[in-house]
Image (cartoon, rainbow, N blue to C red):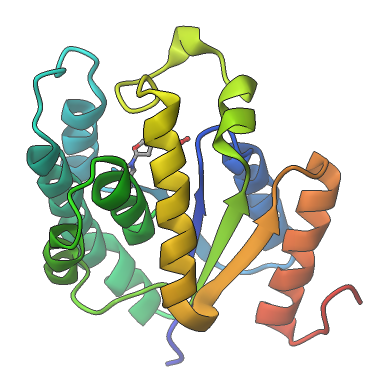
Length: 211
Ligand code: TYD
C-alpha cells in the first residue's frame, strides 16, 4: 500500500494558522482525501497531558531544557502512536506544528541551540514531513493580532523572544531543503487560502500552481 503524505503547518503566533487549518480541513473533505488532523504538543492522550504541563501559566519555573524535553517526549509518543501507523495505513497526516517548532522556539527562542536538534532526532526517528507550510509573518504584526488576555506561557514571552523564534524559522527553512512552502501570511485570509489550495492541488493532483 502507498504510504500517506505527511504535511506539517508552522507559523509564528498570530500568523492565522488556525484559520488556514480549518480551510485545509475543508479542502481534504471536498476532495475526498482521507487524512488525520492532529497537533503538537499533543495528538495523543499522553501528549495532551504533557501539553497541559508545558503550557500551564503556573509552571513559570520550568527550565528551557525541561521544556524542550517535554515537547520532544510528546513528539516521540505522537510519531510512534499516531503519525507513523496512520501514514502506513495509506492515510495522510496533517499536523499543526511539528519538529520545526522546537528548533525555532526552544533552539532559537530559548537559545538552547543544537541540543534541540539532537533530542528531536531521537523523538522523530527519521520520520520528517513530506511538506511543511510556513505561514510567514513579522512577529510584531502577529502579536498585534492576538489578544494578550488569552496568552499562554509561551505567548507571554517578550517580543525579542518571538523575533528569535522567527529568525529560527528562517534558518530552518534555509537548511530544510525542498519540503518547505513559504506563504506570505500578511496577505488577506482569502489570498493565503487560495495560495495554500494551489499547493495542495499540486501535491495531491499534480496540477500546476495557480491553475
Ligand atoms: P498552541 O495553543 O497550540 O498555539 P498555536 O496556535 O500558536 O500553535 O500552543 C503551542 C505553543 O507551543 C506555541 O506557542 C508554540 C509552542 N511550541 C514550542 O515552543 N515548541 C514546540 O515544539 C511546539 C510543537 C510548540
